Each structure stands twice: as C-alpha cells, then as structure tokens.
Amino acid sequence: MGQSGKETADVIVIGSGIGGLTTAALLQERGFSTLVFEKNRFPGGSCSSFSRQGYTFDAGASVFYGFSDDDRSGTLNLHTRIFRKLGIQVETIPDPVQIHFHLPGGFNIPACYSRDAFIDRLVSRFPHEAQGIRKFYDELEDVYRILSSLPAGSLEDIVHLGEVGLHHPLMTVSLAMKTFRSMGRTARKFISDRELLSFIDMEAYSWALQDAVSTPLVNAGICLADRHHGGINYPVGGSGAIPSALCRGIEKFGGRVRFQAEVSSVIIENGIARGVRLSDGSEHFARAVVSNATIWDTFERLVGDPRFSVPKNRFLCSPSWFQLYLGVDASVIPAEFFVHHILVDDWKSYSSPGGTIYFSAPSILDPSLAPQGKHTIHAFVTAEAEEWDRFSRGSDAYREAKDALAASVISRTERILPGLSKAVELKVLASPLTHERYLNRYKGSYGPLLKPGQNILQKPQNSTPVGNLYLAGDSTFPGQGVIAVTYSGVSCASYIARKLGKPLDYLG
Image 1 (tube, rainbow, N blue to C red):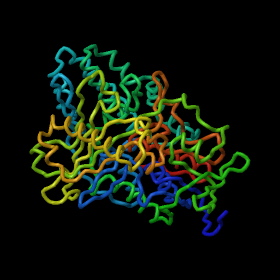
Image 2: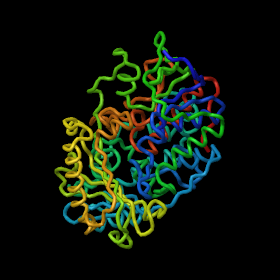
Image 3: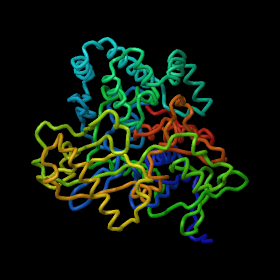
Image 4: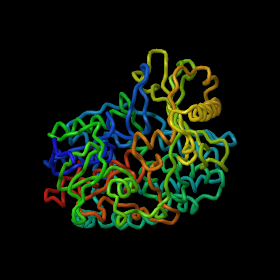
C-alpha cells in the first residue's frame, strides 16, 4: 500500500462539489487546515463549466440564487456573504426572469423578478383565483421573511439552536411548524383550479424534480420567494466561476485542493473515520472527513461496511439527465428572448423521463461564453440510467441513441425557437452514463428525494453513524440546488468547527 506523499489535515473533503468546497472554505478561513480531493481536473461537480471550440457551457446548474447585495443576515444571500467573508469577488449579471414557462393550452408565463408583475400575470390568467393566488404566494413570502431573519447554522448544533431560539423565539416556532407542511397541500388550501395547481406543481418540479405536494414548503419559500428579492444572478464566465472562486478562497487561507486525485475509500478504525485512501494507494489522515458524494456512494462505495448502508427504499432516487450542449448561430435567438425556459407538452407526462424540457441560453447575458455572432444553448431532460445500461459506451448503438433523443429534444424546442435544428454548429451530448462516470454519482442521479409525506427534517443531516465522518451536498438537508448545497456546506462547517472547539462566526 503506497505511503509516499502522505498528507494530513484537520479536515479532508471528498469531492469538490459546491457543498464540499463551501465546507472547506469556511473551515480554512476559520483556521482549520483543509485538504480537498477531486477526481477530475476541474472543480464544481454538477456546477462546473467546460469549453469546446470557443464555446463555454454550464455542465449542469445555470439558475443561481444567493448573490443579492441585501446585507440582512439569515440563511439567504449565502454566496454574497460567503465570498465577502473570504475576500473573494464573483462578478454576476442580474437576470430579470427566473424561468419562462411554456405550458399546455397556450399558457405562457415568465416568472419575473418583479413579484407584483408575476402575480398580476397569474391573476390575469386565473381571475377567479385572485385571492387564492395572493394568499398562497404570501405563505411563501412568510417563509422567506423568517429565513432571512434567522442566522444560518447546523440543525444538529444544540448551541446554535439554543441561540436562535433565545433571540428569535416566535420565528423559530413558526418555522418549526412550517417544516411539517408541503408546498402543494398549502396551495390546495387556497386554490382549486386544476390548471393553476398544475402550474404550481411545475414551479416545484422546475428545481425539486417532484410535484408540489412532495415538495416541502420551506424549500419553496427559499426558491420561489427569493427570486423576487435576491433575484437570479448569473456568474460572469459561467457556472464554473463559483467553484473556482471557492477554490481560490481555500488556497488564499492556506488550504489545498488536489485535482485528479480520486478517493477510493474512507479509512475507518473502530467505527471512526481516520482519513482516506486514494486510487493510487496513498493514505491521508485527518481529524474529520467530509463526503460530498451521494449517501449511496458514500456508504456503499467509500465506506463499504454493510452496517452503515442506506436502505434503497428510505428515499426516492431522483432521475438523471440527458443533456445537449449546443453552439448555434445567434440569428436563431430573437430579440427580447429570455435566458431560461421550461417546455411542457402534456401535463400527463411532465414528470415522465423526457417529459419536460429545460432550456437556457446564458450567452444572452454573458456574450463571452460564445464566439462573436454565436450563442451557447444548454437543453436537458430527465432520464433514467437503466434506460442506457444496455448500451456500451462508445458503441455505434450508443451514439445513435443519443443522436435520436437529441434530435427529438431539438425538434420539440423549435416550438419556441423555430429553425433551431438548422442553426446548430456544435453539438455535445451527455447521457446518464456520462454523469455516472464523470461525477461518481449513483445512477448518475440528482440525489435522494423525500417520499410524499416525509418531513424535510427527515433528510440526512451532516453527521453520520461513522464517527468523524460528515456529509455535505444534495443528499443532505435541505436538498437539491446550488443554494441548497451551499447551505449544507455552511451547516457542515458550522457543526465541525463546534466539534473541533473553534466555532464559526455567523455569516454577516
């Protein structure tokens, strides 16, 4: 077993996803030594960028919260406050519309930054539900108001919970009650129109990959209210600017991020994590180990002890993605075209694999992402790894299946961009097998989802049954999305710092 090049640190982080990088950056700034191992040559996981022939594409995420200049404390505006603490600047461009929805029956609505304009558009479509619309979105606004007032920290940190409860008793009780409520059931208290409820399902599905009944009200309050406060802001240079800035923050304070260094296992002695073993056989030791992998990859692949495995039926496994990265002639995109779109052809199949098309053209905001006179397009649909397991990577059959699905997605997208198929000059395709291979994610998935009826507090937290082994990322509370995994990183860093005797200051 190779021992050369052995490194030690207070905290080792497995994977450079946003949750893990946030954990490392905050701990390093606090004075703990951190060491991040990443199997790829670049950071970010699903929130990364790559380039082809002069085009820069977002590998996954492209709708970003958390960059508001609002100086209020709380669990929101996390990117702004984290980068302020690190002394790192990430330049962003405000986006006036979160998503432009193109729905069955000719129902089209942009979810714009202006809350009044958005509500007015909904009311004009559903005048008979005017009162219910306002009451429902006021419920989300109330969640936002509470979260923007409470400091971010770990729900496992008794001291943190005590301080929050002492200084904000009424808000703490109110938020605790709301954690037991779902977005969809709340909507149904005020609204009965089936088409409008379908739209609210789509509001949830657009980021949570579940209908509104299965989506916790607290999560909805973060995403669907904050778009009217902090808004949507795109990082200049693409989504990879966020992990790159976190890496700079880690290194600024003396931490290390090692690329092309794949962790093969967690070293465990007497039920306690002592470090990690890399694929080259070298071993590295720490006082705490943080896994940014999914719960299934963490316990079945990295830990490998059946006593700690997570039953497959404890949570739902989210789908994976089939993604198209297109370089196109700019003439295909009309003036006043929004950046982010969702297309649904039939309400009956919106949650089936491929039923909803997600579409973004970020070069509309940031022209540096494409050559002059060109645009980048990122289109994707849900897909299941099992559908692709019958193919051998690199085979003719695999390429033909990818090309056929890509042609179908492009053809359907011509509903909002006529002539798209003829405007494509570069095409890069990624299946669930691609995500599984590059990101080391179980089935290439988007992580675990709560089952209908499960409470948001039933999501895994940062601690694990293995001593000194912690989790960050979309497997943990509060769940999927860049701002959510950022919160998981803040929570994880806060919990570890308290455990190691040097608590973090609250982000301000």
